Amino acid sequence: MATTITNENVRYEPGEAPPLPIAIGAGMQSAMVIVAPVVLTVVIVARIADQPDAFLNWAVFAALLICGLTTVVQAVRVGPIGSGHVLIMGTSGAFIAVCVAALVEGGPGLMASLIVVSSLIQFVLASRLALLRRIFTPVIAGTVITLIAVTVMPLVFETMGDVPADAPEAAAPVTALVTIGVIVLLILRGPPALRLWSPIIGIASGCAVAGFFGIYDADLIADASWIGVPFGDWPGFDVSLGQEFWVLLPAFVVVTLVGAIETLGDGVAIQRVSRRRARATDFRVVQGALNADGLGNLLSGLAGTLPNTTYSTSISLADVTGIGARRVGVVIGVTLAILAFLPKATAVLIAIPNPVAAAYLVVLIGLLFVQGMRIIVQDGIDHRKTIVVGVSFWLAVGFQNGVIFPELLGDGFLAALFSNGMTAGAIIAIVMMLFIELTGSRRRRLRTNLDESCLPDLEKFLRGFAGRGSWDQSPTERLLSAGEETVAILMQAAEQAGDEARRLTVAARMDGHRAEIEFITASETENVEDRIAYLNELPPAPDEHEISFRLLWHYADSVRHQKYHGLEVISIQVSRAG
Image (cartoon, rainbow, N blue to C red; front, side):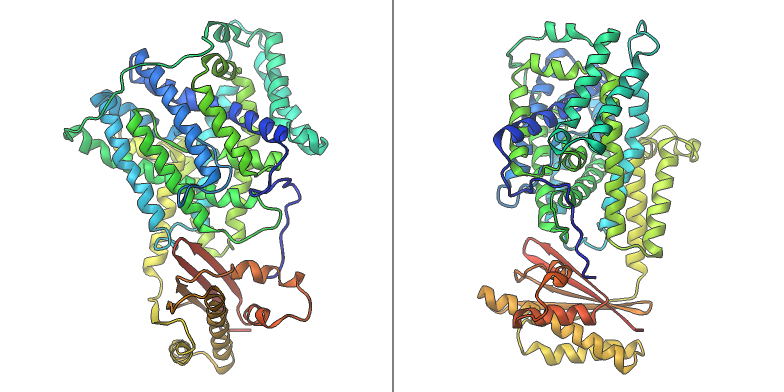
């Protein structure tokens, strides 16, 4: 339990300030990678829905501006909005189908109204995340992140061979191979200084090879203007709330919820790749990321462009470069916002040939898949989590490839919903987690004050709980001791903070041979999970403030501390045996 995991790859943590040239270089190369999907997603939706160029130009401009603004908010954190980490915001591909349907059925006004209403879900989810903690777990987050690869990789592999019809036969494979090869070689064996620039060096090498084969579209750059602001008509809102609105609203709600789960996973993952020493997940960071995501969707609806979401490539970029500094997030956001006013600069990035972009994405998504698996494994694997991850993952693969009873799904809402592997897998995983929670043993609760007077009540409560499970004296005493030390830690923290009397809720239930006890309070406490993990680094003779941590480490089989805005949950497990 006290093993400390270190990540020597991290050069700059969120609170550290890398030299300005490194921050600008890393930020601009990340923006270069992000701007193409931001723009192309809007272009795809507008073209499929047969929208005029005025709408397209405005939607692209607004998307870049809002993505830039919300990326800065994610980095700097404004009150409860923002993660305080480098989470890049971009237009969400998950909304392509529903936005096309809205544009076809009612035009930009209907789409804008649906986006504004559905964006409120993310604010609600962020504020109620503590109540949903047993459903939206790291296992769900990690599963959704792995499913991003299931959803995106087929498109990436298809794009890798997408070159003009008159291009030489070797153009696509050689260009892609050079791009991947340069990036991988620099990551594996390149010096630290060059590893920071491996993405941009790989892309530049691929573009050079593409130019040799004649598949780099320089005309796109030449035809673009240097500076421009589209003065297209703002699409406004369709406030009639007609039949089309109510028919499409459930689809927008479901897709928004799935996007929020992806953001939840990104909020967990970015913390793991941005720190040198592993820490327990801070769910206030996740709540901030969800709030910023909701802000981005709200602004997108108000502006009449596509919703945005956190781009999971943020995790891979931080992992590759070793830079998690907030300063880089600000540079990325400012760059995206400036690019909204510079069509020629945007064209340089959009002109990157498909084999180059796809080859680079293979590396990023491959790393992202591993991060998702790491989140799942580090949360602890048991038979229930194994079945949730395994079944939801492979059913998602089947739905993504259209091989699971496609005739039963038809061509309507269900077909659109389950044709996306990430959406299908997330729904299946959530349903399974709900089933586990609803069919588990009933929790017994004690509500009391967080002070010395609660100790007799706590002892009576835990003794009665252990007695109903027919526990022997030895495990019962360990359970009592673990509970008393947890309360002692909470009281000690409240006393040091000068807090007034706080309420404490203790929830207990049996899970096989283990007792699971939750201590829920509003006091601000040092993360107990982190403190216990670092005990092996502390002096052998602890001071009086460390005694409760060491005793809890001794008595409990596992300790987990989840911190939310206004609420903290310390969960301990004590085994009946051993």
